[in-house]
Structure formats: C-alpha cells, structure tokens
Image (cartoon, rainbow, N blue to C red; front, top):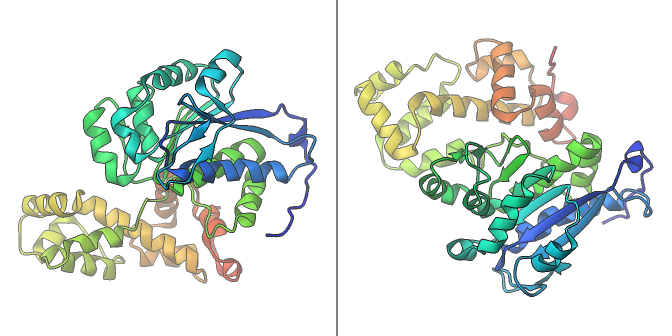
Length: 349
C-alpha cells in the first residue's frame, strides 16, 4: 500500500475525539480490527501532531491479553477496571464481543455500558454485540440490527427492541448497531464521514482497498439469493418470473392467479418460504435490480425506473432515500466502478 498523503484541513482545529472499543472476550477478531483500522488509517491522513482520533482498545476481562475466536490473541490498551479508575470522557464507544460469548456476557461490563450510554456522543455495537446493548437496556424502544443469523433470537429475547435484520447498519438517535463481520468497517466509515466529511471517508475506503463503501440501508445479502432457498417449489419459479417481469404491474392478486392459488395461500407460502410478503418481495427485488442498473451504468434514471417497475423517477428516488438513505445519484457515485461512473446518467434534480 502506498504511503497516504498527509492532509491539512480545518478538521485539525477541532478537539480530538476519543474512540473506545470495548471488547467482551473472546471476541470475533475482525469486529475489533476492522473498525480500528478505519480510525487508525484516518489518523494517518493527517499531520502527526493533530490526528482527529484517539483510539483505545479496552478489555472487559482482568487481563489486557484478550482471546479471540480465531485463536489469535489481541492486546488491549487497558482493562475496564483501569478505565473505570481513569474515568476519561468518551466521544464514541464501540462494543464488540463474539459468538462464543453470548451465553455469558460480563454483567459488570453491561452495567458500565448502560451508565456510559448517557454521556457518550455515540454508542455502537458490532455484529452480535447488539445482544450486549440489548441486555444493558440501551436498545429498548429503538430500531436495531445484528447478524441476520441471530436476528430472530434477538427479537425473541428482547421484545422491546425493534429488530430489523436487513440493513448492514442502523442509526437510531445516538445508538448505532451493525450487522456481521465486515459491516463494522462500513459503520466505522460512516462515523468518519459524520465527523470529517464524505471525501475523507472515501479516501480511507480507497486506501483500504474496499471494493464498495456501503450505506447503512444496504441489505445484508441479496434478495435473489434468499429466493434460492425455495428451490424445487413452485415459489422458486414464481420468483424467477417476477425478476423477469419487473417492468409490468405485479399485484398480489396477479401473482396469486399465476400460482393458481388464493391471495391468502400465496401470502402464507411467502411467509413460510422467505419470511416476507409477496408485496415486500417485489419491492425488494425492484430495488435490488435498480441498484444493479446504477452499478452497471449507461442508462438514464428514467430508463432504470421504467425497467424496474417504478411508476416515475420520483417514486424511484423516494424508494432509494427511504430504503438506502441515499439518493440514486449518490448511490451511483459510490457504487459504479470507476470506468463506468461517467456512463451513469442520473440526476437528483
């Protein structure tokens, strides 16, 4: 990797932000290292005497030597007990843990998280650490996400939490939750963007050789991929047919007629096979197809809207903002490969 260019910006005149990654070991190593690399590399872009972040890794155990699920040890800067004694201000608190830890979360650490949640500017969880925030009561009444594989368990164990298993990260007030593994990197980039601007976050992503910088509303995995779970059923054939006819009207009644069944039965089949409704599935497939079209480039917004079954450009734009948190133009700028960016003919006007 090439040496990053040092930057002198107005951000250097803002107070340094203390970012604390609290780990409840054994941790999933990438949940810790991924976000840490984002903040560390951001610091490297600035003059050495004024990095924007002070990054510290804290272990909830009695030892700074932390176990990880990979068997590779991590070394924290201090223990939680030392942090309690120092009682320094925290700007951003990021909680990490591991799949093996969920059954025995450190209660004293959870109490500390709950106490600090009232005075930190941002409180975040990576992957299954959402369970730590939920157990601490921080997610009550909030919308949150976690790894899709345990989203249902989070819903059942904590009914006061509004769990959404689809997005890669969610912001609700000053609390941020993210999905599995690499989503922690996306969340960290979003935090950098909030603090220092999108240009800096994009520069970090480019230097870390990330293929995409994903907005929070991006789905954890492909809708089309999910539909393959129904292989061998009539529902699979219907899903393929839907993807080939997005430009047409696709009402629930029409889909039921095609399956030679009732609307009620079709809804029940979608709930059982894909854990969604026919209408929601069509909406998701249309959005995914539009995203792919913008990534490929070369088509106008009007043409993409028509091909994907949106009644107007305005409807398409509203769908992007509502579901992904970005406009089609912003999405195209972030996701189209560099050699095709110039081919994307899209306007937010």
